Length: 284
Image 1 (cartoon, helix red, strand yellow):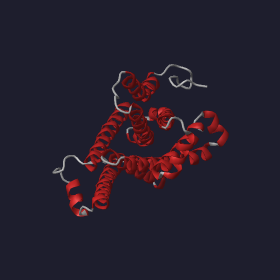
Image 2 (cartoon, one colour):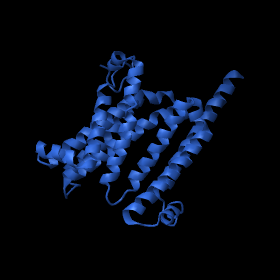
Image 3 (cartoon, one colour):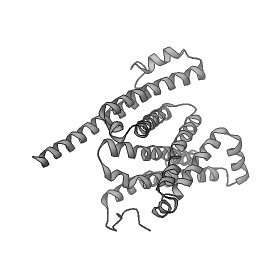
Image 4 (tube, one colour):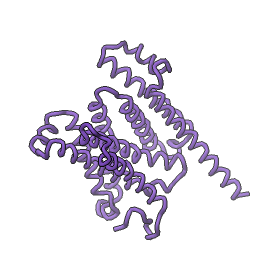
């Protein structure tokens, strides 16, 4: 079995080693904070929140690998996609393990809570999907299942993404800004994939497509936030939407999504210009 920091030919990879360190770092920092006493009140709850947060962050990063690889013309990114996905599952396992620890490992209570509280049921369903994908992430399982069957199975990561976003949103009772940003970015990545499936990788990675998807995702985020506060507090939908699309209420999630999407377009433009320049110089 190939260790994570080595290439297929067995050589050491600084790139893979750096990604491995990056996905492990949040867990290491959380452990240091715990033992150093940074969580004086309900430390286990803080760890539950931290591991859950990094589960969904890494899940979204794994989903972003293909769009970034194609848009940035950076083929090497695909070599770390499985590592990031497995890391997301590992944090999810820690998340539910510490939840069980917080309940004194009373498995009857844990199972009852998962069955009776809908946001826990949704989160557990996402965990099961991530588990199935992690178990079939090896080269051996790709050969055993066959490339097409393996690819169909791993499209379930989008279902896991939907469930994870819903779980994150439902458990964030007070501040829903980051869940809205995560949901907006998930909309962007899903829309990218639809363009890719219905068209081609070239069309999906084209700069006008990337810019249009960014605008679409940011508008969807603003509409989602307006709908949330309308149904949650009965605030006028259009007034909330107007506040979301202006800067009077600060930098709202829609603007964060648009900012991230704009950075993607800029980086993609620079990378594509660089590749075109290199091709021109090579053919000169």
